[in-house]
Amino acid sequence: MQLGCTRAGVLLERQGSGLSEAEQILLEDHLAGCDRCFADAKALRAMGELSSSFAGEHFLVEQQRERALVRALDLSKRRAPSERRRPRLVFALPLAAAGLALSSGLLIWSGTSREGDRVLSGFVSTVERPIALGETIPSNTVLTAGNDATLAVAHARAHLAAGAEVVWRADVETLILQSRAIDVSVDPQPHRRFRVITDHFSVEVMGTRFHVDALGVRVSEGVVQIRGTDGAILVEHLGPGQSYTVPAPVEAPAKPPELSTVEASPAPEAPSRNVAPANHRARFEPRSSAPASAELAKARRALSEGDISGARSVLADVRARRLVRRDQAEADTLEAECALVARDSEGAVSRYLEIARAYGDLPAGENALFAAARIEADAGHKDKAVEHLDAYLAAHPHGRFHEEAIARLSALSGDPK
Amino acid sequence: MGAHLLEPLGSRRPYASHAPATIDACRHGDRRALESVLRAEAAALEKLIARLVGPRADVEDMLQATMLEAIGAFPRYRGEASVRTWLARIAVHVVHAHLRRPEQSRRVSLELVREPVDRASRPDDIAHARNQLNRVYHHLDQISAKNRIAFVLHVFVGHPIDEVAALVGATRVATKSRVFLARRALLSSARKDPVLAGWFESGRNGGD
Image 1 (spheres, chains in turn purple, green):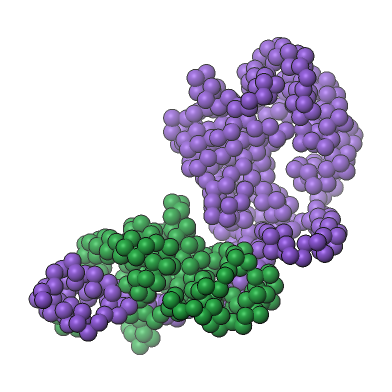
Image 2: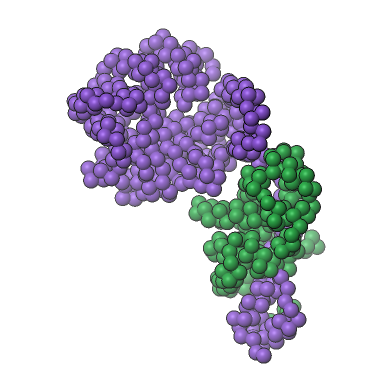
């Protein structure tokens, strides 16, 4: 029986896992007469031996394997404690609650760190000291990139532009961008959310690549969702090549801001920071079916275009309806933003404080209290700012702006952090 | 070629090297039991991952990811395959996901490559072998993750097709196709590589 080259190739593949004697003879006969298959056989064998020889010894040293094991065990504890401990949940619940309260307190005051979170490249430092390559990143601490740097944080890689300042909160897998820009690549594999927060919006993703700076987001791959500081969805799905822009920061009332604009860039490399054409914006109108939500979104769009009276008019219409509490909070927040855009800082602060009092249990209440503190601080009203920041930290010890509040408080009181 | 890393999947020996009590404890998330089992399997897992992806800096990351996945999945481990085989499936899954990530640098970090020839070799030979290994994994990087994994497991590691099919979660026919396509692609690009040219010379001394 004559063996063809195709069949010989299949037998070559199987050589490693064993051939029968008959197959071995057939293959040898074929190789004896076919130079090409003979060369392929030689190459495959050499490749296999080479691959085997390097993996024959352990590639990692014992210490590295041990480190991987310890990290995996530590991460698993944080990842799904409820799932793994379900059988003992009933008995463990009171103890767990006490432990959670205690550990949350410790997290807030002493910060947390995980071994997996580390500096991969570049020069990164905290206020006190530089962080060496491979060193674990401290949580809840401002990190500054001296040059372009890369961090491994949770299931993401963050590439920091030179001078970028970020705070990593390991407990909630959130990166807070304080200045400059970062490019983030999130591994979809762990099926966990990863969040980047800036002053004006947050980005939540499961797995994608995107660029964030203070003014917006540009997506290279995957889909992200953009939320406002009040938790409201600004853009439900932002896909590859699209970008979201917030041209004017809320705390800078000196010039009339265009608060939120969404645009579809022609190419990710060249994002435009201008207001997008109306036909592009229309694609990202909030998809809420609730009429009040749609009207509120309309008010926000009007405000983003600097049309304060238009926004107020829409808000007046919305208020005539019966609103659920969340929409009411959103309407009040928009009123406060209208005052801010109209350069009525005092009025804005007053409204924000009302929101904080009325909706302290909602994200809008938390955001409002912090916004009031920030406006007072920016206006140079130190005592009021300290008062509001103290109130914020007392009311929201796990708040999203916890670190920033502490940093601002330290700056205002002139004490080191 | 390479020694078998796994026991035959067909054998129904659920606890080949670990006591049933230890496995039960792992299912309940007992840290000591998990440590004991994973520590015992770490070396085999590392070897498997290293064979699949080549010598690169993130082997440790992939080993960690495999262990993390395994810890999370232990409550669902039914004992139908040995722990080692079950862990190998997870490792293959982790490697597959890793290789599919487009941002992954596919460059082999040469400084991390252990000497791929015996210690008696001359430095020139060692350097050449490193370079060849680098090129082999470079060519493998050009192949789709699915095909590459099936090929490496079958041809380099030496698992029978049925085992590979079970490991990658594909049918026998699909697995054979993957191996065939990967071999064709690898040989096609390797033939044009000057570093690997010596393997394809027609001289028969030292060949089969």
